[in-house]
Image (cartoon, rainbow, N blue to C red; front, top):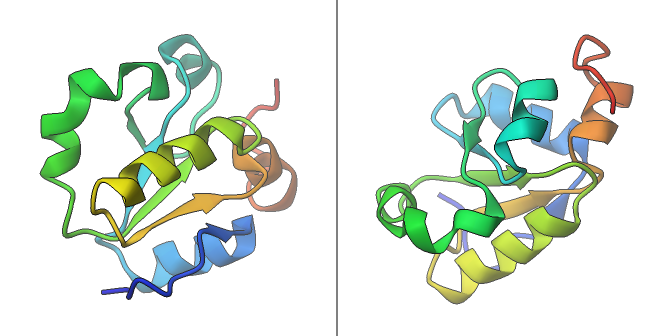
Length: 113
């Protein structure tokens, strides 16, 4: 379990390493459903930033887990991470560069858009 001193953001290589080291880590995709249909990282959970209030129960169930949040480039996911941390989720980080960086640097099989 991470501490409150965990960095707020990691790059895609650090995110990949975190997922390899902790199979229980939760990868939240905070893009919209149509974006998720275009491209997504296998195993990610779709919780759109625009629907964060409607998904409080789903998020609360993840409060004790380590969480990585991503979007297309990293802006929306940073907003979600800030909201989560403000609400007591200390074990969450933003994936800098989002799914676009993931596609370019980690898995070219994930389509870019």
